Length: 201
Image 1 (cartoon, rainbow, N blue to C red):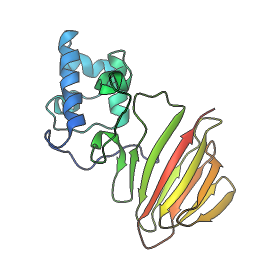
Image 2: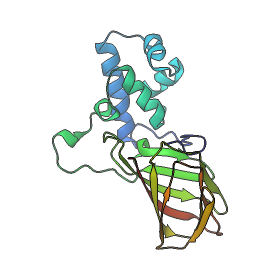
Image 3: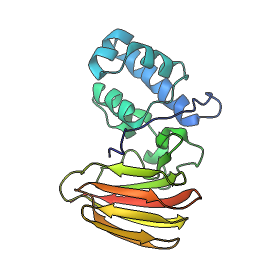
Image 4: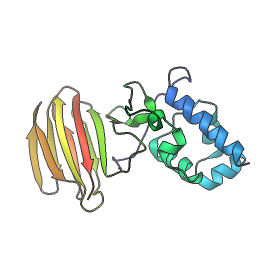
Protein backbone atom coordinates (compact mmCIF):
# COMPACT_ATOMS: atom_id res chain seq x y z
CA UNK A 1 0.00 0.00 0.00
CA UNK A 2 1.66 3.24 -1.11
CA UNK A 3 0.12 6.23 0.67
CA UNK A 4 1.83 9.18 -1.01
CA UNK A 5 5.35 9.11 0.31
CA UNK A 6 5.28 5.79 2.15
CA UNK A 7 5.82 5.25 5.81
CA UNK A 8 7.42 7.82 8.06
CA UNK A 9 7.56 7.54 11.81
CA UNK A 10 8.57 10.61 13.75
CA UNK A 11 8.88 9.10 17.21
CA UNK A 12 11.49 6.56 18.21
CA UNK A 13 10.16 4.87 21.33
CA UNK A 14 12.36 3.50 24.04
CA UNK A 15 12.77 -0.25 24.26
CA UNK A 16 10.70 -0.26 27.41
CA UNK A 17 7.65 1.41 25.87
CA UNK A 18 7.72 -0.48 22.56
CA UNK A 19 7.39 -4.22 23.16
CA UNK A 20 7.07 -4.90 19.43
CA UNK A 21 10.30 -3.05 18.72
CA UNK A 22 12.12 -5.00 21.43
CA UNK A 23 10.89 -8.24 19.93
CA UNK A 24 12.03 -7.24 16.45
CA UNK A 25 15.53 -6.17 17.51
CA UNK A 26 16.02 -9.43 19.43
CA UNK A 27 14.86 -11.47 16.44
CA UNK A 28 17.13 -9.68 13.97
CA UNK A 29 20.14 -10.22 16.24
CA UNK A 30 19.23 -13.86 16.78
CA UNK A 31 18.72 -14.64 13.08
CA UNK A 32 21.77 -12.71 11.89
CA UNK A 33 24.07 -14.48 14.34
CA UNK A 34 22.48 -17.88 13.72
CA UNK A 35 23.22 -17.48 10.00
CA UNK A 36 26.70 -16.09 10.58
CA UNK A 37 26.02 -12.78 8.88
CA UNK A 38 27.76 -9.50 9.59
CA UNK A 39 25.77 -6.26 9.60
CA UNK A 40 27.35 -5.38 6.24
CA UNK A 41 26.30 -8.71 4.75
CA UNK A 42 22.73 -8.36 6.01
CA UNK A 43 22.61 -4.78 4.75
CA UNK A 44 23.67 -5.96 1.30
CA UNK A 45 21.09 -8.77 1.33
CA UNK A 46 18.10 -6.66 2.34
CA UNK A 47 18.96 -3.22 0.92
CA UNK A 48 18.74 -1.54 4.32
CA UNK A 49 21.71 0.55 5.42
CA UNK A 50 24.17 -0.84 7.96
CA UNK A 51 23.55 2.12 10.26
CA UNK A 52 19.77 1.54 10.20
CA UNK A 53 20.23 -2.16 10.95
CA UNK A 54 22.54 -1.28 13.83
CA UNK A 55 19.95 1.11 15.26
CA UNK A 56 17.22 -1.54 14.92
CA UNK A 57 19.34 -4.11 16.74
CA UNK A 58 20.00 -1.63 19.54
CA UNK A 59 16.31 -0.80 19.82
CA UNK A 60 16.89 2.81 18.78
CA UNK A 61 14.96 2.79 15.50
CA UNK A 62 11.34 1.94 14.73
CA UNK A 63 11.44 0.59 11.15
CA UNK A 64 8.62 1.13 8.70
CA UNK A 65 6.65 -1.83 7.38
CA UNK A 66 8.57 -1.64 4.10
CA UNK A 67 11.94 -1.87 5.89
CA UNK A 68 10.69 -4.70 8.11
CA UNK A 69 9.52 -6.58 5.01
CA UNK A 70 12.92 -6.23 3.32
CA UNK A 71 14.66 -7.57 6.42
CA UNK A 72 12.22 -10.50 6.64
CA UNK A 73 12.72 -11.35 2.96
CA UNK A 74 16.50 -11.35 3.41
CA UNK A 75 16.03 -14.14 5.95
CA UNK A 76 13.51 -15.91 3.71
CA UNK A 77 10.66 -15.15 6.11
CA UNK A 78 7.34 -13.34 6.16
CA UNK A 79 6.92 -10.34 8.47
CA UNK A 80 4.90 -12.51 10.82
CA UNK A 81 7.61 -15.16 10.99
CA UNK A 82 10.22 -12.47 11.62
CA UNK A 83 8.49 -10.89 14.59
CA UNK A 84 7.43 -14.36 15.81
CA UNK A 85 4.27 -13.18 17.51
CA UNK A 86 2.29 -15.46 19.87
CA UNK A 87 -0.60 -16.10 17.44
CA UNK A 88 0.86 -19.60 16.93
CA UNK A 89 -0.30 -20.62 20.43
CA UNK A 90 -3.36 -18.40 20.90
CA UNK A 91 -6.62 -18.04 19.00
CA UNK A 92 -6.75 -14.33 19.93
CA UNK A 93 -4.29 -11.85 18.46
CA UNK A 94 -4.24 -8.35 19.91
CA UNK A 95 -2.80 -5.21 18.31
CA UNK A 96 -2.30 -2.67 21.06
CA UNK A 97 -3.14 0.98 20.49
CA UNK A 98 0.37 2.05 21.54
CA UNK A 99 2.21 -0.51 19.36
CA UNK A 100 4.24 1.76 17.08
CA UNK A 101 5.41 -1.15 14.91
CA UNK A 102 1.99 -0.90 13.21
CA UNK A 103 2.42 2.74 12.21
CA UNK A 104 2.49 2.95 8.42
CA UNK A 105 2.91 6.72 8.32
CA UNK A 106 3.07 9.40 11.00
CA UNK A 107 3.71 13.06 10.17
CA UNK A 108 2.10 16.47 10.63
CA UNK A 109 -0.52 15.83 7.93
CA UNK A 110 -1.46 12.21 8.31
CA UNK A 111 -1.21 9.23 10.64
CA UNK A 112 -1.90 5.76 9.24
CA UNK A 113 -1.99 2.77 11.56
CA UNK A 114 -2.53 -0.75 10.27
CA UNK A 115 -5.05 -2.70 12.32
CA UNK A 116 -4.73 -5.99 10.43
CA UNK A 117 -2.14 -8.52 11.63
CA UNK A 118 1.13 -8.18 9.73
CA UNK A 119 1.44 -11.91 9.11
CA UNK A 120 -1.80 -12.26 7.15
CA UNK A 121 -1.76 -12.64 3.41
CA UNK A 122 -2.48 -9.25 1.92
CA UNK A 123 -5.91 -9.94 0.47
CA UNK A 124 -7.45 -7.57 3.01
CA UNK A 125 -5.84 -4.66 4.85
CA UNK A 126 -7.44 -2.61 7.63
CA UNK A 127 -6.22 0.87 8.59
CA UNK A 128 -7.00 3.68 11.00
CA UNK A 129 -6.57 7.07 9.33
CA UNK A 130 -6.09 10.41 11.04
CA UNK A 131 -5.82 13.38 8.69
CA UNK A 132 -5.09 16.92 9.86
CA UNK A 133 -7.57 19.75 9.14
CA UNK A 134 -7.62 20.64 5.42
CA UNK A 135 -4.88 18.10 4.64
CA UNK A 136 -5.33 15.28 2.15
CA UNK A 137 -4.12 11.77 1.48
CA UNK A 138 -3.48 11.17 -2.21
CA UNK A 139 -2.76 7.71 -3.59
CA UNK A 140 -1.59 6.60 -7.02
CA UNK A 141 -3.49 3.69 -8.60
CA UNK A 142 -3.04 0.39 -6.77
CA UNK A 143 -3.08 -3.04 -8.39
CA UNK A 144 -5.94 -3.78 -10.79
CA UNK A 145 -9.01 -4.92 -8.90
CA UNK A 146 -8.15 -3.09 -5.68
CA UNK A 147 -11.16 -1.65 -3.83
CA UNK A 148 -11.35 0.54 -0.74
CA UNK A 149 -14.14 0.88 1.81
CA UNK A 150 -13.85 4.07 3.90
CA UNK A 151 -15.95 4.80 6.98
CA UNK A 152 -15.85 8.20 8.69
CA UNK A 153 -15.81 8.02 12.47
CA UNK A 154 -15.22 11.70 13.27
CA UNK A 155 -15.13 14.80 11.07
CA UNK A 156 -15.99 15.00 7.37
CA UNK A 157 -14.20 14.25 4.13
CA UNK A 158 -14.33 14.66 0.37
CA UNK A 159 -13.50 11.51 -1.58
CA UNK A 160 -12.21 11.70 -5.14
CA UNK A 161 -11.80 8.50 -7.18
CA UNK A 162 -10.96 9.02 -10.81
CA UNK A 163 -13.52 11.48 -12.21
CA UNK A 164 -15.99 11.00 -9.37
CA UNK A 165 -16.27 12.74 -6.01
CA UNK A 166 -18.51 12.67 -2.96
CA UNK A 167 -18.79 14.17 0.51
CA UNK A 168 -18.91 12.03 3.65
CA UNK A 169 -19.92 13.00 7.18
CA UNK A 170 -19.44 11.08 10.42
CA UNK A 171 -21.10 7.67 10.14
CA UNK A 172 -20.99 7.63 6.32
CA UNK A 173 -19.14 5.01 4.27
CA UNK A 174 -17.95 4.95 0.67
CA UNK A 175 -16.75 2.07 -1.48
CA UNK A 176 -14.67 2.88 -4.55
CA UNK A 177 -12.21 1.56 -7.09
CA UNK A 178 -8.66 2.14 -5.89
CA UNK A 179 -6.94 0.99 -9.09
CA UNK A 180 -7.17 4.62 -10.20
CA UNK A 181 -5.89 7.80 -8.60
CA UNK A 182 -7.86 8.57 -5.46
CA UNK A 183 -7.77 11.15 -2.70
CA UNK A 184 -9.23 11.51 0.79
CA UNK A 185 -9.50 15.18 1.73
CA UNK A 186 -10.27 16.47 5.21
CA UNK A 187 -12.51 19.42 4.35
CA UNK A 188 -13.15 20.46 7.95
CA UNK A 189 -11.38 22.44 10.68
CA UNK A 190 -11.05 19.34 12.86
CA UNK A 191 -8.97 16.19 12.65
CA UNK A 192 -10.53 13.48 10.49
CA UNK A 193 -10.73 9.99 12.00
CA UNK A 194 -11.65 7.24 9.56
CA UNK A 195 -11.27 3.51 9.05
CA UNK A 196 -10.18 2.06 5.73
CA UNK A 197 -10.52 -1.50 4.45
CA UNK A 198 -8.52 -2.37 1.32
CA UNK A 199 -9.38 -5.51 -0.66
CA UNK A 200 -7.67 -7.18 -3.59
CA UNK A 201 -9.15 -9.47 -6.21
